[in-house]
Image 1 (cartoon, rainbow, N blue to C red):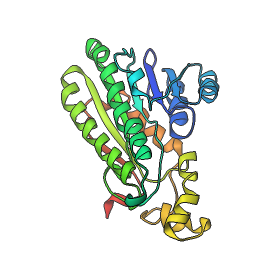
Image 2: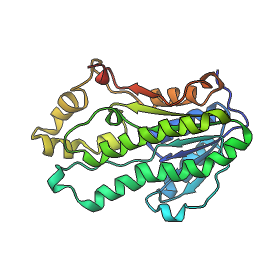
Image 3: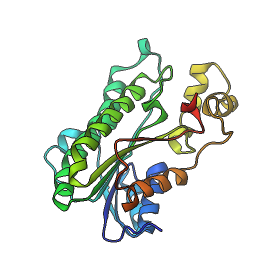
Image 4: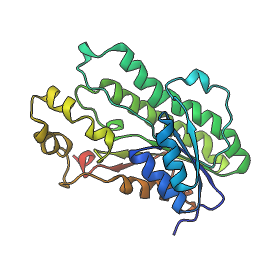
Length: 248
C-alpha cells in the first residue's frame, strides 16, 4: 500500500479523464489533492468528492502564472487537448494553443514547484506525455511536437532535480478510454476516410498487441507508484502504457 499522508498533490486537467482518476487515487492514498482545471464547476465537483481543493485556472494563459510559488509535494502535468489536421491546413492558433497548454504550462508549473521541493528534499513531478512523445502519427504535428518537447523537459528536470531528492518521470499512454480520446472519433474518421465505427479497430487499436484500450485507473496506479517512496531512484524515464505500440 502506498501512503501519501501529509503530501500535497496538484493535478492539472484534474476534472475529467486521466486527471480525475489520478486525483481519486492520490486522495485514496492519503494525499491532499488540488484539482486544477479550466472547468471550474467540474473541478469543484471532483475536489468535493475527494476532499480536496479546486483551482480554476486557464493554463493556456501562462502569463498569469509567471512568478507564482507552488507549495506541493507532487505535481502532475496532465492537462491537454488534441487537434487533428494535415500540416498545410493546421491553424497556427491551434498550434500555439497546444504548445502553450502542453509544453509551456508544464515548464511554468515545474519552475514554480521546484524551489519548495528542493527545500524539503523530496518531490515528485509526473508529466503525462503520450506514445506520441516517442512516436509520430500523421495529422498530429502540434501534439507530437509538444509531447516530444515534454519528454525533453522531463529528462532535463530529472537531471537537475535528482540531487535534491526530487524525481521527474513521464507516463506515455497509448489511447486510453477518456473523453479526450472519445472526442477524436469524428476527426479521426474524417481524416482517415473511414467510418466512426472503424476508428476503434483501425486507429485506436491499430498499433496495439493487446486488443483493448487502457482505462484511466491503469494510468493512475502507475502515477501512484511514481509518487511513492518506492520510486525514489526512478527518474528521467518514459513509462509506456501502450499495449505494445512502441515495441515494434
